[in-house]
Length: 311
Image 1 (tube, rainbow, N blue to C red):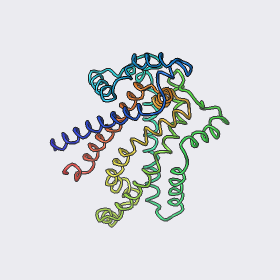
Image 2 (cartoon, one colour):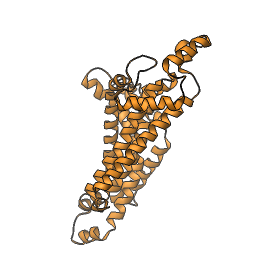
Image 3 (cartoon, rainbow, N blue to C red):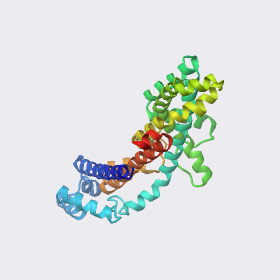
Image 4 (cartoon, helix red, strand yellow):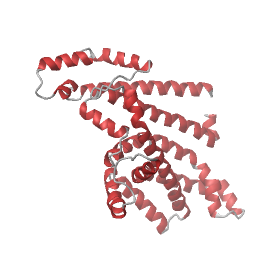
């Protein structure tokens, strides 16, 4: 068990290093010059070259990456080209909004998927099951930004109860501002969770121990919640961990749709400005989140399924 944990940790570190390398290289290979964007399109080439030298962009890419890794290991993510502020401070300023969105959206998607999957499995083959399966297909087909805009059009604008953008200043304004983005993100994540959980619930209901419990007169609702659902939890947890990347991608889309001042909108702005330190810092944080999701999912799967723990 200890050897397996060490192996997972080593794999996680290699993945993290690979993610930073890919992000670093792709960012520098993208067309556009940070110095040119900072100085303006009409700036003389000599000034652009001087700015590149000042930013350290005239050195070989491998040397730049080695310095970046060394600085990260010492807790220095660099300084933003556009604001000259520490990337760590900028990420800290924006992380709260993204944390609100990720927590609320993931929680809502899990609640929605467990409810819908349980109903679909309990009423399998009926109109309830058909409607839920149609919802999953439609949700996968609909773009995230379009779902957000429809929620604004159908809920926020007619009622005036919820803001259409921003994050507010007070706790109440934060809660109000995050409702529609969280619903949008939850709808984005839920379809795959519903389909996987429904399939596993149906399989669990057909297993021998559930049929034995049913023969003893256990109500069908209790068979689902007390017997089938725990057995189907491990695959559902695995799906949630796999969706970590989709979760962050969805957060980027949702933050830009609702003008939330989080890491997703900051990443898009940094890409447009060719702000390499900011791009690398946010990408590094996102990679840590994805890998952490995977490690936590492994631990939870081992808790709910002894077979995983034995492996």
